[in-house]
View 1 (cartoon, one colour):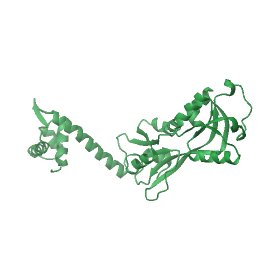
View 2 (view 1 turned 30 degrees about the vertical axis):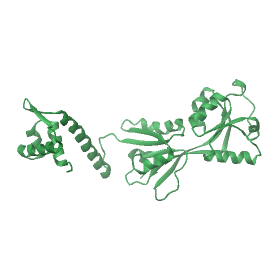
View 3 (view 1 turned 90 degrees about the horizontal axis):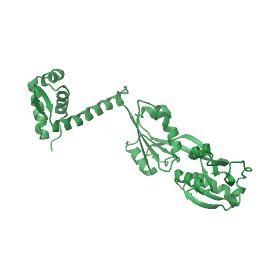
View 4 (view 1 turned 90 degrees about the vertical axis):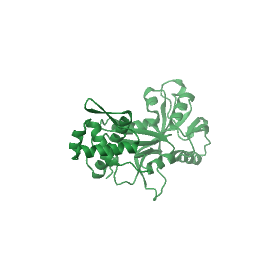
Length: 295
């Protein structure tokens, strides 16, 4: 099958926006008869008439309207390509394509993305998924950045770059002791864990490994009520069960402000890291250049 002739498509595009063959021919610096021949060849290639004449004006047929939608998209994309590779400003609204690991705190995502969302000139597409899937999309250039609470695997060939964009010590949180808001005695960590049900991140997480090491060294066997890899679910279980939950405070920001949950103990020795993962690319997204200091 013969390929589409894009010169013919551009001629059609010029005529479709002017609706007059003569004016389009003048803009293209060709004769009206030559332009008419080019349009006819495009119609023959597509198998449909693109125009019909009404009152000395050319009106698009149904096929012509469809062709114009595609032509607009094609030439807009071409202009954006030139602007990107030549480093010149584009009038098109750039879109930042962000992937976020499904288990990552929504509060953290909002906090990091909000300054970008407030940029009137920037659009955003946000998708969530598993780490492996998101890294694959990053490698295929269908994502610009991936947000995660773990670094990408060390793989020189893949070209992933993990930048730590935040760090926060974990806390043990629960509903207010005794169902009230009066101040309880200070929580003694790790001794007070012995008789407390716990909700913990799954054993796949780095923070869980650090926590387990501390309690093992203290000779304590904690009562584990649940192990959860989804921070949103961990937050809900902390609210509903009354058990102690090991979380970064950012996960339960609203609950701490309202008093639904209280911070019983801050574990400065266990830190949650947050990463923005990108690829080694010559043409970094403009928004990421400012947010991450990319060259």
